[in-house]
Structures are given as C-alpha cells and as structure tokens.
Image (cartoon, rainbow, N blue to C red; front, side, top):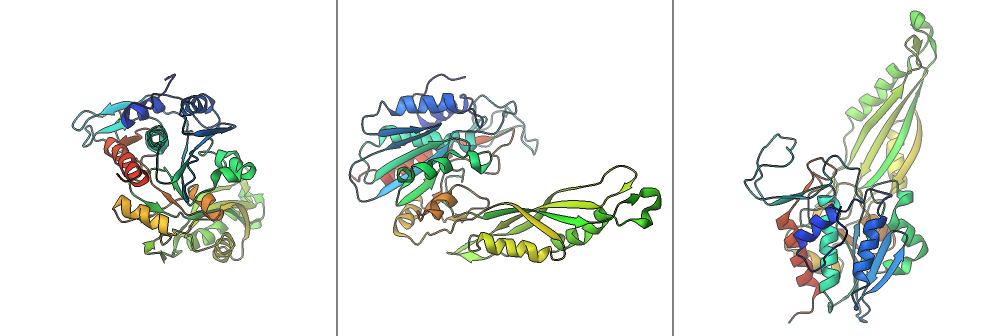
Length: 374
C-alpha cells in the first residue's frame, strides 16, 4: 500500500500511487487523510473536511466558479489492487474478456484506475499547479459513490453544506474516454408481483402457477419498444429490462407468487413520475412497487460556460448512458458534465485500466481551459 502522494509527480505516477491506496467503499479514510494532508500544504487553497469528503477551494474573487468532482472509493478488489503500467505491444498482466494477450496502447491497470482514480489524479495535479486560474475553482473528493445513495459523501455534503458545492459549472471526472458525456439517464427499479394459488404439485390443476403467469409480463418486456429521444442534439437510449426474478416455495408446491425486478433507464426529458407511469403501464394488471428511483440530468450544453468547455475539449459531446452524480448538481440548478480519463466499459472489471493518453489529455485540456491566457 502507498503511504504518501507526490502532487509534483506526473499524472501517470500519481494515478499509480492512488491505485496502490486501498479505498473500497466505506474504507476511504486513509486516502481521504492523505488527500487532505497534501492539499492543506497549498497556500492558495481553503480546505474543508466533512467525514471522508475533502473540499478545496480557491478564493480569488472571480465572477465564475468551476467545480471538479471525483469519488475516492472503489468497488471490492478482484486481485487487481496494485497498479501495473503496460506499454503498447507488451503482454497484458490480466487477460481481457476477449482473451487478447497483448496491449495496443499504453495503459495503467489496477482497481479504480478508470473509475476513477485517474480522474482524481488529474484533479490533484490541477489543485496543486493551477494557483492562478481565470475562474475560482472548487475540488470535491468524496466517499461512498459506489454504494447506496444514502451513504454518498456528495449527497451528505449537499444536505449540510450546500454552499460548498455552489458553482457555475460542475465537471464530474467520471470515465468518459477524455470526451464530454453530457447529462445522464434517470433510473427506476420496481418489483412486479404476479399472484397465483398454492397447491400440491401432484395436483397442480388445483392451483395457479404464479411463475407461469409471469410469462405474460416477461413477454411484454421482451417486446417493449424503448424510446430514443434527441435532446440538445444528443440521442439518448432508454431501456426497460427484467434484472431478477424470484418465486417458488418448495419442490412440491405450486408457487402462489412470483416477483420480477425490473430496471427502467429513462431519458432525462422524463421525470421520475413519468417514468413510474411508463413502468406501471407496461405492467398493467399486475401489482407494482417502486423500490428506488433517481432523476436524470438534462445536457444543458447551450449554457455559456458549458458550451465554452465543450469547444475547448474539441470533440463532439456524447449522451451519458447511465446515472452519475451530475444529476445531483442538475437538481440544484448547476449545469454539469462528465469528463474524465478511462472507459466506463472496463469500470469494475478485473482487467480495469486507464489509457495513459487519456490521463495526459484530460489534464492538458482542463489546464489550458482554466488557466489565465498568457
């Protein structure tokens, strides 16, 4: 395990050091302590600690403020807790899902390298070396993003100290392959209950098999035609899918209940209430209980500061498939985008990695956009 961070090392070395810090969800204290220890040394930053969330801000009196946010936690380790740097053409330390034995680009492998210690490394580098930016800056390093929302450090901070999150634009360093992913989908999870009547399986005709009856609802899901709305020029894709099913009492009993868990990912032009109505419409005739739901975030790329940032990145923005903490900022009236090194396609995977080119590009783009022109 690493015991210290060097904010003067380059972004790749800093990412490797962060990966070597174990910080699974609920166990981020050591890393939060070290991040705080390094940031309080920087005279141009005001540092506030709230639990295992660390906030650092400049106070130069600029008219605008940009917030950069990244979570410190990772999912549980899967034999990938230490950073390994692999250059193009070298043998991979972990065989990917396609079984490929070589690497076509320079990569840093390790737990959280993509999600999202590469992004945290970029933030720390900027916090240390952007002493005179053209806007005021807020850096938020928070805990428990990978677990239930009730534990999320950003949510807890917003509930007690919303003033620390005030900004004209928030950039979440979620892995987006060094491009802008705007907005995010909403998500709703529900349980659809199918009723039956118990009977001895030897006399099945005396009962009603709830598992069999669930086939009607599953057929509706299978044939469901999801929307693909275009919002601010970006095409979002919705999806309603069964993600779990349970039923049955014993090997000789006709089940009297079957529960299908369904997840609906909806475009940000729909509210949670509209999403719930859609789920209930598809499940008409069955009992529906909403388990949890979260509103998505509209892109808001037409707002001046967001448009300026997209122009600085220089590549066409993409819609965000999935839910991220940009939605928390959108709910507070703060436009937010996802922009970070790494790919969401390898997040949480045993062979998780971040491209070294992504790390350098993200740092360079943000530095050039944020610093005062010479």
